[in-house]
Length: 179
Image (cartoon, rainbow, N blue to C red; front, side, top):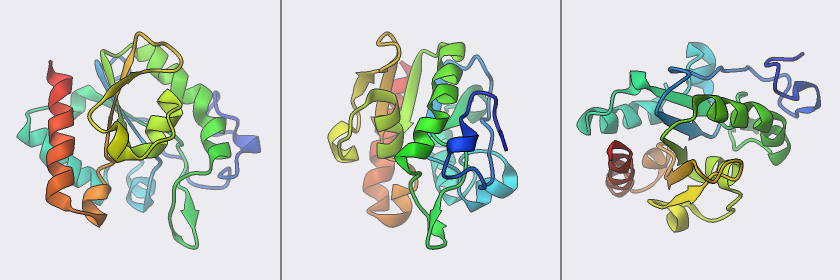
């Protein structure tokens, strides 16, 4: 079953998973690209509304960045699991969604795109490095080098590692979007 006209859902390993659409204004100056939806997002049908999204909202409030003005796009719009737990989407699923992801960014023509985590960074820049090596840096988008991709940790990292350190790093990185 085709979930989005630009996705190759028939060939996707996640074709039977719940689809979560993009949220936010189509012409946003800032785009956040995250990995894929989780269980909460399946229910709300809005990206980044689970625990990680709630942590991100605290940062956005602190730096006075209005989330309603930001477009949030999943690298892969379907919830990926492995052994009943959230898992990064397989590369084949990301490829099936890549035409849609790239078209959404191209259409918005944002001032900046923030890639949250390794999956989003790799999908947008082609870089396959640890987040700590790309964090805080901007790289050209592989589709249009004039659009910069600012890389940072995925907010879910705050739930699993040194929360304060990662919170501060994400905050520092997001402050760069206000320039």
